[in-house]
Image (cartoon, rainbow, N blue to C red; front, side, top):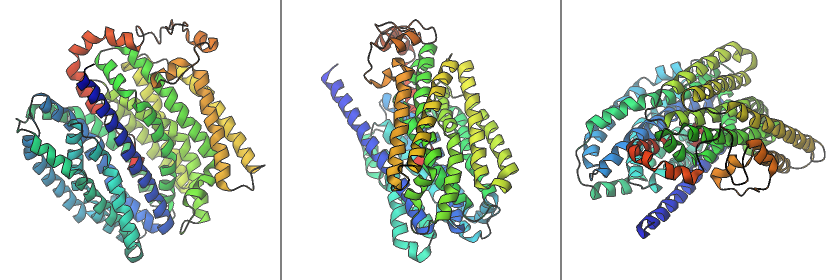
Length: 571
């Protein structure tokens, strides 16, 4: 390795660390935003109205920032840079047209706001506040588009700090407007904050983007490559919209329930999705290797990595699900029961959270399986088709039981639909992507489910017994430690081959794990399901020729796939 390469590696490492800190800060502020809204506005018809309007930025964000825009522009700009060009011509020809088109959409949403509210939530008793909020949040269609264009081009230039800071700036804007104007305009302050925060997303990236424009020469824009990108991105766009449509169904039917029902479901989702997002962050480190193995046609390597990710992510989220089911009332009470958020709101939100947590494994598995599909050279349509089937199940269960069971039925419908989609996607992975040992994955996860459930149940009994009079935070700490111990026990039982990608030390003398996996003391394997050649280092050498032939496809896949979104709770 040359000194230049070493320096580049350090630079990339520092950029990754900076991005992680900024993303974590933005996510934390997003959660603080929800806590502040619960404190100031509680769970009422006003918060329901805002959440109907919130559907617009929730939908636009994955399309114009996290998914379509990134997956289209990152490879295009990367190819331009590789050819010695820059992005001036691409920006001059693409950005004005995009802004013009998105402005037209924004104006249309503003004019048609009453119809939009009627379509999204026909049961709202007072649609007026929702209409006003929709007109304010419609601004994000333009600002998110510009922010997404900047984020994609900056990432292609290996400038990761400003794009990582966009949600930090976004939530700062929302919190500032709520703090300054909630007493004057109520819930409307949050909608104004969304519009102002989206402008800050552009502002935080503007200096770095202008520097890129000044540094780059004017290249010839690859129009043919751009059209190819649009064709390739269509499955990802449909997948994203279909997944987001679950929220449309929940709010459409929830608008006909008691005031505050949509808010109870939203607060429960925000809490439940934290462990799901963390579970996907755990496996993000392995995704570049998965993309490379896919580009090289190494189906054995793809199968091994998918199995590792399924068990690690599934184990984490199932442990968290057991904890949430056991301690939902304490979690909601500690986080939200302040100000306008009443004890009755805590009771209803906790009941919804317990049901919603049952679908977290499905949420995590769908996100992981979709990555494996999208790691292929050309993204397939299967994830979108499977999610459409799951959405149909969600809509049917909601329609059948919402009037009887309220928000619990909406949460159960979401859990049922996403779990069915997850099972179908796993079957599709085995049939179309790689021979994943699903029985072994199921066995590992079954052990975890038993361990996590027993640990959470024991912790819950402890909390209601000896710790019954203790503060809620103490009870939560005891339950968290017990559930974490169950997750650690799963990792110990699962074996060395599952944790090797993370570089976690493992006692090589454990005969049980070696014998169960058919591994030799030297680290080899005799299991056909796991045999992909040699170890990772040997694989790298053996695949050198294949990588040279697949460099273009692999680079495009890795660059695009790195921006597949985790979930809407990051926003």
